[in-house]
Amino acid sequence: MTEVASQSEIAVLMTCFNRRETTLRCLRSLLSQAISENYGIQVFLTDDGSSDGTGDAVRDEFPEVTVLQGDGNLYWAGGTGMAWDAARPAAFYLWLNDDVELRPGAINTLLTAYGESADPSTIIVGATCDPNSGKTCTGGMIRESWYNVSVITPQDKVSECDTFNGNIVLVPSQAEQRVGGLDKAYTHFFADGDYGLRASRLGIPLLVAPGHLGECELNPLANSTFDSQISFRQRWKKMCGPKGYRPPRQWWAFVRSHAPRPKVVYWIIPYILFGIEGLFGGKLRIRRHVRRPMKVS
Image (cartoon, rainbow, N blue to C red; front, side, top):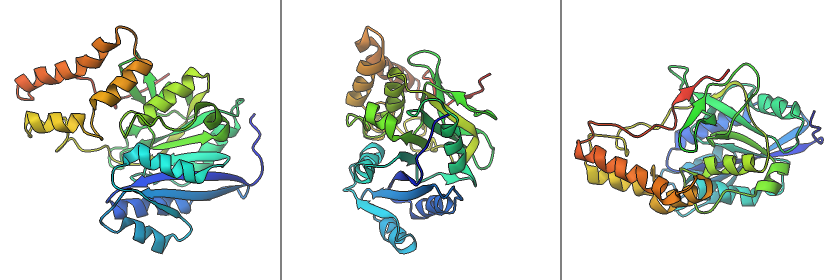
């Protein structure tokens, strides 16, 4: 079993942008967690240029939270990286999306799963579910092939995964010392999955904690790359944007790091498929959805 020093600090890393009430709800669920007196929580929140007063609202309600100021161009990866830089050193770094409402006992479940691991560098992933349907939204992912990745439904005990979504992830300092921080090649979509794959490549165990530890909703398809109601040009622009499904340079960085050869073929395939879909006016859907939940034995 992994031994944890007393009074270990958990640095919570968060990024927000223009969803004040959502961010406040997340912080309430976090700071109301009952955890062992052996742990202390310090929250580092990057407000990436919000215009709705999110940063000030957090400062007013939670003066203990360290609010960092972004310029609107950091997105999830850059904002989390800024929070991470401010938080070092700490015993643990907890990635937490600001749209997650943690369930009671979530932090203790993560820590218990970590404490039961034989490797002090083990990364623990927390799954989330839709608040209405109860279906798994994010968490650990299994790689059926290098390209076909599925989110798994958490079990009643810890289970292994190949990589993860970054919504709830506990990264111990021992893992950070080996993997480092998030790759600055990415702004949003690939950063968390890339981190998990790099950790796995180094032999660091990735474990999914039991049960759903939080609730959140998947991003809606409306007004996204997958929305057939908007024009092909609009969908293409969204796909290639900083928060898009396949920004060309970031997709190449991911392919170069994780795809088999011939890498350029794997890089270009999504754009070809997107073009074919465009010819049919969005009525044909041939791309895979990486967030498809699956059960594991």
